[in-house]
Each structure stands twice: as C-alpha cells, then as structure tokens.
Image (tube, rainbow, N blue to C red; front, side, top):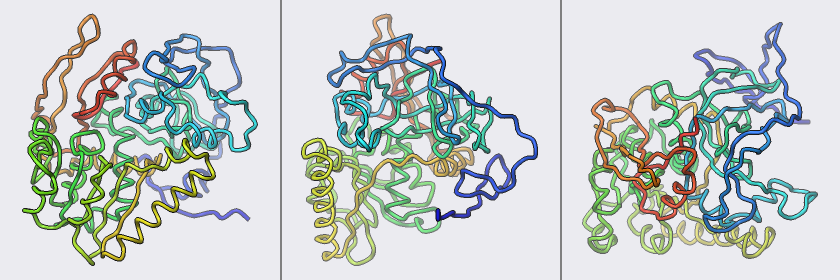
Length: 428
C-alpha cells in the first residue's frame, strides 16, 4: 500500500492540507477541467541533434509544443531562462549515460532518441495550462522553476514542469532576475540546508568558508549564509573581491595572490565549507574544519556522472559508492564530516527561497549586477554597478543578459568560465 505522507503547505498565503503537495484533501465542488491533447502546433527553440561543441546548437521554429502527460504537470510560457555550466557540459555529452537511463529506464527507445534535445534548466514565466491534480497554480500565475536535467529544457517558448518542481515567482523580481536564481539557488540550498544541515535557527555565529564564491552558486550562498547570521570567508580572484564583499563576505581570499592554504592558516577554523571548485582543494580544505565538533565539508564537484559515462551505469554507480563511502569514513575518523551534494528540483524549497527573497532578510548591504550592452555582432561589454535600491535584500547577481537569438554566444561566454554571477536569456 502506498505510503501517503501528510504535510501542511503554505500556498497563495493560505494553508491547505495535502498528500505530499500533489493531492489536496479538500477539493472544490466545481472545478474547470483543463487538459491538452497531441497537436501539430510548433514553437521556436534552441536544440541539439547530437553531442559536441557549440556548433551543434540549432535554432528551429518547428519544435513541437509540449503537452501535459501527467495530471500533476503544468505548461509554462518561458519569459526568461539562463545558461549554467551544466548546460555547456550536457551539450558535450556529459552525463548522457545516467540521464538516458532516467529518461528511459526500461531501454525501450533506440539510442539517440533524446534528440532533438532542448537545454536550459532555469525558467521564469507564466502558467498557460494545468493538469487535473494541480491545485496550487492556475493559468496566468507567474512562476519560476528549475527543470531536472533529464527533461526537455527551457530554451524554448514553452516548457512542461511538474507541479512539485514549480513555485510562485518572487513578487519583487522581474522575470529576467528570477530566471537567474532557481538552479543555483536549489543547488546551494541542497548543499547548505539538506546536506549541511544549516538553517536560520542554527547558523548564527558559525564560520563558513566558500570556495569559488563569485559564481552563481557562490554568490547566492554568501547571501543566504549572511541572512542566517554566519561569518563568511569567500575565496575568489582579486577582480571579484569587491563583488563578494558587497554581497556580505566578511573575509575575502584571492587565490591568485598566493597559496589559499597558506592564507587560510592565519584564520580560525571553520564550521562549514562549501566547495564549488573541486580538484585538489579537498586534499587540504578539510584540515581547516573544527575537529570533533560536527563540522562539515560539502563539495558540489563529484565524479558521479563521469563514472557512469566512463564505466557504464552499474559499474559507475558501484565506483561512486565506494569512492564517497571511503572518503566519508576516512574523514570521520579525523573528526570531520565529508559529504557530496547535488542539485535537487523542488518547488517547496523554491517557496522558501522566494519568501526569503521577498522578505529582504539578508544582511548584505548591496548586490552588484552586470549592466550589459550587446553590439550588433553580439559581443557583450559592460560594467558592474551597484543598485542602491537593492539594500538589505537577497538578490540575483546577473553578469550578462542575451536575447533569445544569441543563445550560442551565451554558451560560449559561460564556457569561458570565471563567472561573476549568472548569464540570462530573455526569451520574450
């Protein structure tokens, strides 16, 4: 018998009782039915027909408009999306073995059936249609979401998302601003809250180290940690130091000015480390945690998908389990916790993030954002500016925006690395 978990959710400023956010106990006596059926209507989208370099990106006006297959799904008209490093990696085939298994666990489809594949994880837009079991949204609602990587992405006019993956957009943000947050915010939330166990009630006074602090995940993590009262040390390059200071970082370490390990020796030990860099950092970073105090190191750079690409699904999962288990046990005996974290699509978590954004609870003093100007050829120039209207609020940090026609240029910009926030695509 299916286990039903009863929970209380806050939706539309009211409280409803539901079975895990999908089925409401108290149903309205009269409800308009809205369904979709297969149709030949098409939409514009950026797709790939094979994995490879940037040349595989193709614009089409003939992508089929998605339809609702399950009663808990909604169709969203995309107003803005964004490009994340995972989109660049997926374009090149990263994670294809694991993602195809998720798309087709019974291996019914032929190889390559995922194409044409639409990339893009973030979306901010307007609900166009709802499945029969969707109770918290209606056509016309402004929403935001992060779409799981095994689903068709958001670089298109319309996208289908599960009702459990979508949330009402923060009222204080435009669609362009909102589209920069969901994927990085949920990734940071997973690492900080779900894996790290930190929240607004236990974070005050804790010392936090963020490696790779100037990217999308890092800039959001700084603001959340400061909103919860933590002392934050950020590691980034010198040209991003002013940005992370304005976001609220208490100490800033420039990794280009010398060994980060040597610079950290002059600081007190940390309660929590968030690693967005990976590589050799985990060989020394855990030495800067407080021993035998519950201190935790969480990395977002893991070999999970690479193992399955290289070894196959079964052997890759086995290798991954052995790796993380041995490392966790090794560091446990040294008095610290070693953990991996991953992006998790979650509408309820986006509810909490939206509430935090709209409440303006952050102790940051300003947020820097990129004022970009696109030339006729599509090359971007601009400068970082501080908007005094963003005082005392958690806000997205946008490095550059591109029109929908310039998606390949946006991919190249993200592929170059050294991000100072997010790259956003205005679709509408």
